[in-house]
Image (cartoon, rainbow, N blue to C red; front, side, top):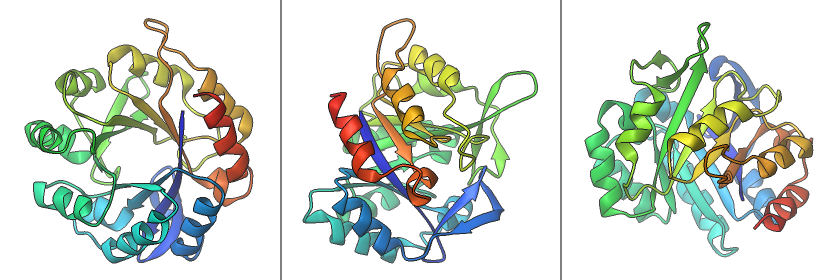
Length: 254
């Protein structure tokens, strides 16, 4: 299982939002220092999100992302970038600066044909981000545009539309758990692994090594597949998990 150390960007600063709420922000300073810290600790992936772009579609933090990619390239660290990537040109621009994989979220729900076409052009270099809220009726409802709007498209319909495509991964985020350190949504992740044959990356809620180990142990009830990766942010930033320990645990699972 891959560990993806998360760096969220807003106005050039590393931040974390609580449940995707832009009014509930914690600042973590220089994103370049974080990239150096994670790289030195053995991370093989960085998961970088332009939060400004997620809301507006404009790549506000592109220059910062470019510097991060350059800084960690020598250490062989791959960078995955998401937030506001909704056009073919934006994908090409990101991949052109050395980004290993781009995450398309809103576009996957609003223009799935575009995402499938871009994925065919760049096999394995496009991931689909599926972010959801748990409604009162127990349905997991996808959210779009920086989590500011709900989508009428069901999770199963989104996943069915991607089946057989050259998608690198499906990155699944439980919005209620994101930044809350409340543990991952193991049940939801298991359900999603049953819905697709694509690699599934978990995001949201990891607070401890015990949570990470629970993801490592998680298997699809139907086909026995394992989670392919885990995005970890606040737990690393707050020192609840040491990057070296997390990387070692994930590597042992391979």
